[in-house]
Image: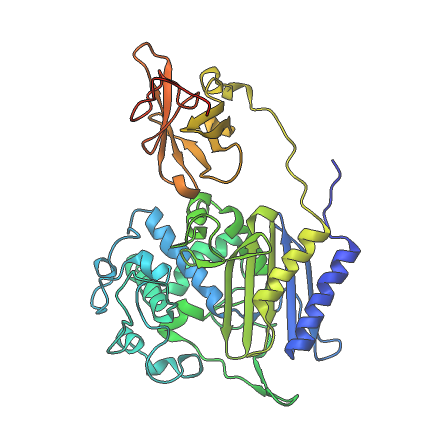
Length: 459
């Protein structure tokens, strides 16, 4: 098979053009863009207002709320180690906050009912000395609504999660971050404080082409909500982790759990959502996971499209102007459309996975008069989906005790099992109490309510 290690010249030009447009139209001192394909940083580029002095993929920018994803990963590690449960109330592990009935999952998904910001001075531009305790971050009235009712973005919520990590681990949040995520992933240019070379943060006047330097404050207790500095190259490594997991940090199944929408509508009925520490978006038929970030002087975005094997990264040193989320998504789209991903070659199942009994279950099944088809996947998984039109299809993972559990859509978490007659032959499939038979309403089949004895008839 032909190997494509780099991007085509035309693709690279289109990417460079998109970054140049973002810098010019967004009136930013500089913009850096990068693209990751199948775990490899295949392109990075930048545009600057200073000729010959453009930043590169190793230049640090502040990434703001992308920091929250790192905090969420630390919490998920604690869960996987059995040190806490996502449905645990915060009070069980972090006492005395006054909001202890909020669950850890609600904090991760911003559904804890907490305010978006802290009381008092603008926390992003004021000294952390003004907020020495969690009570200073939360204020006298931390709740806007009852926990669990709806999504409402909360920076104080992620401050609580950072303090939770410290309480359970017994080490500072920064130390847990370094040893548990940054070092294993080789992200040595991601730090709580800037390390040269780094960009300076600027505010650009909205009505004139002049600039003002922005202060860079240490966020103190709120570091876990937005403190970090990083580079395009380091975020490329993190994007690869978010796409596939890494056993040294967090298993693929746990990362996939983070990517699931917290409270969407039915399958396909959401455009923007939030998982466990990850923003989710659908655009032009593609699903993106990641996060955007901003602090005075800086804007950032990291979007991963898992099905395309692509990630886009955008960093800018301006308080406003560029739209980093849109630019990062555009970078993915440019590559996906100019250089479509090659599908994996079809291969038959390994010989040891061929199961004659399972093969006998493949083919058409009927729920009433609705026609479904069952086909076999790897490792004895199955796909069960309508044969025509739209309907409730799903993929299913085999269970050790027999049967399968739904992985997506309407049947996520529901059990599909084979029901046998007294002689051992297959009677029907049971899916969440729905009966699927080999024929539509055959008289001898176990159809609830029975079948009219006169059978099928014409008008």
